[in-house]
Amino acid sequence: MIEIKNIVKSYGTRKNKFQILKNISAEISGGDFVVILGASGSGKSTFLNVISGLERPDSGTVHYGSTDITALSDAELTAFRRETVGFIFQQYYLLPNMTVEKNVRMGADLSGNRDYLSIIDAVGLHDRRKKYPSELSGGEQQRVAVARALAKRPKVLFLDEPTGALDEETGRQVLDYICRLQKEYGFTIVMVTHNANIAEMANTVFKMNSGRIENIYRNETQKNAYEIGW
Amino acid sequence: MIIEFRDCIRLFGISVIVCLAVFVCTIFLNYNLDITAAEEQIAPEGRVIYEALVMTGKAVAAVSGGCLAATSLVMLLGYIRSFIDARAKELGVLKALGYSAPAISRRFLVFGAAVLAGAVPGLFFAYCYMPAFYARQNETGLLPDIRIRFHPELSAALTLLPAALFALLSMLYALSLLKKPPLQLLGKTGESRPAPRRRTGTDRPFLKELKRSTLRDQKLFAFLIGFSAFCFSSMTQMSMSMKDLSSESFSGMILTIGLLLAFLTLFLSLTGVVKANSKPIAMLKVFGYSRAECSRAILGCYRPVALAGFALGSVYQYVLLRLTVTCIFADYEGIPEFQFSLRALSISLAAFIPVYELIMHGYAGQISRMSPKSIMLE
Image (cartoon, rainbow over all chains, first blue to last red; front, top):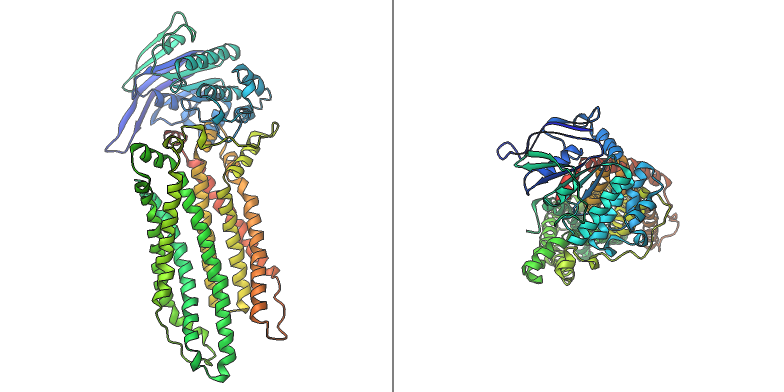
């Protein structure tokens, strides 16, 4: 369970200070598929960064069970990220001079996971495991990023616009892999998107606007990646 | 704008290196020109010392000035290359916007200005120090007073020529880079980074593999770091060994210049290493790799290179000084052979290791302060 209380986050200096997150509170249950939905500039990515421990809020708390990650030191926060969370970004951020296999080992070695090849197989890249990122398509690169994030066996997977740089077919394929893997491994998903159609895949949706959660709703039925519009 | 304010600080490093090289070269070359011109005034009893001074002057100018000039040249060329390479994306944007290749590459003429900004003070300081230097060279009083003369052709050769050379080289390198299509410069096509031919080992742990690939793919930085250790080793040992060949003040000068050069090279190359690896470092941090693991993987791979550079510098200074001494005293009997100084090596190594580790520690701190989010927004 992730318990978020009164998060405030601003950017800029005194004169040009701009509040991005305005006193946000929410709860995320273990095993949930949460989508943070909002337009560009609504604060959704900053919210994701704060609850995942990538950024510190100005005030407020983020509890993972009994641990308040906002009170952790830098070294403790690093250890927290190592043990608890995985990340997938819009721009993949793969290491260009490493093969698919080595990129996935980046995550696997952190958790001592020796079975990383099965995750490469699970995202359908078995034949491409000796290739370098420059030899892969955008969709394949994002699947490597998925495998890399999951290879460290995270309890919570954070995704920031994971299909933002992909075409419809590839985007659906990547989302489908993520959902299938969630069912298999049982991790929590927190995904940021501006695409309202993708929100139909989640069981809980946080709709954000101007730095606040405008609405929280639960979908009665979760659609799969091939049932949603694009 | 391709050259920003923070770049000016690094360009200042280039100016300092050029200043030192011009300072040393001007003093010795000017002295040689002046003493050669005064040959007719030399009394027969001062003839031997005159010839020895001319030869020593030439040798020292060749060894120190030449070594310094060559060092500066290699280092500056390496730095300019990495500086321009790091701006490939900006070049791509400007090219895509429709700026012509000559218009874009002209911006890199600024390197010529940086060289000139270092060369002119170097020349000035050399002439300021020259009276003391001339007096010290004639401490025996056997030579007539050598008048300091200004040699415009020498000054031009040491200031305008290198400035023009570096400006031209920078521009030509930028032009060669601009031959690539804009998308390739922007890194949007696979062509900009051809897939490495060497395949990675399957069972090697990720961090070990990262260490190897960092070294393999960033050879220029490896060269510059090895080179800075080379400078440190050769210049410090040379300054200690040169006490017998020239004055103590000159040894001190060589030591100061050698250390400055070594630290500037190390500073410029390590800054480049951290900047070039900022994205992998950010991802390592996002995934939860600790500060020690990040710096071991990114900076630790250069330690063997630095030690190899140090060893090479030791051999180089010994060979160079031995050859010089053999040439100068070829006609004199009973001159003992120039010996390798283990004492100089020990002192130099004892100074190098903690200094190197301290600098690396400083850069490891810089890595730990890097915010993953700000890097990802770049």
